[in-house]
Length: 399
Ligand SMILES: *Cc1c(COP(=O)(O)O)cnc(C)c1O
Ligand code: SF4
Image (cartoon, rainbow, N blue to C red; front, side, top):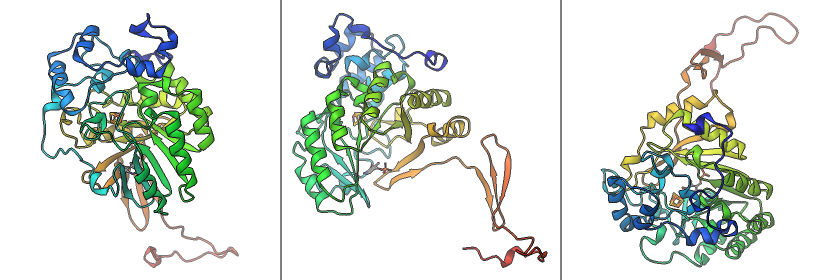
């Protein structure tokens, strides 16, 4: 596994597309136009397993197949278990629906006061501004909305959402997501950001996007100018495996950071992709080197046909435990479960506390050693130095 061993290797170049002029390769619209979207195109470049063929035949009924040439280069075409391959090439497992799975597992539609806007937390909203992505993740929570699955053009105007935010002064934080907001044109994004900036009570704007990962060419100097002009705009990118941290992604993150965009990362814990402490450690180290702070690690939502990606929550906790204390604190994401039905994100933390009494906290450190922290300071002397009788702990009022 060279990505964990060779810490200096950052994939770069045009891979399978050497023959394409560099100017085209670096043009994000070229990348979009030349996406791999059919089984025939896939098979031109690689041999699919029977499982993948079956998945592809089913894919367009659920979530479209699309992979940018840039991202396709990161797939190991000779390894069916390649962690990048699993994320974007459909598998037969997608056809298996299991108990408890739902199309709208987070109850987003129920918390949606106007189409395309989810208001679940008191002071912030999720604003779904497009239904398109540059490539499609096979474990996508919003497969009911993205890739035109329902065959309608999703909220192209955003007016209703903007008016809702204007009318709700409690909304101080707007999270633009989708689909992928960075697929909107610079002009459209600029318009959206300008409108949001005009709303006095909106203090915080952020964008959730996998574009830097699928299509780093989209992070143009012109786009960065928009962020400079309407900033601060924060951004959460979505990287799951160290192999996705390429020289191009690193450069895109640098352009964003230099435009004043603070960067975070959200990963989804996926079987066969990143359900391994060493892989996760290599990932967070690379993220930090790209100026990206790991933000959330998500337990996978209960999406239909997602069971083949599911990882035991105890494994997730073990991974977090293997990071905390063992490596840079900035590199440890918060592990969460987005509670099914719309309960919001619930933090899942490994247990370090053995016991808390009125007297003390008994805890274990990252190495498993036990430590005690006294809860009440019991004065031994008065201010002028006279000794005090020992104070029984029961006299101390616990607030
Ligand atoms: C995740 C999410 C947010 C943002 O949550 P933070 O913890 O503030 O990052 C907001 N609204 C919805 C509906 C969400 O799912
Ligand atoms: S980028 Fe996000 S919204 Fe788009 S397919 Fe992937 S998980 Fe879904």
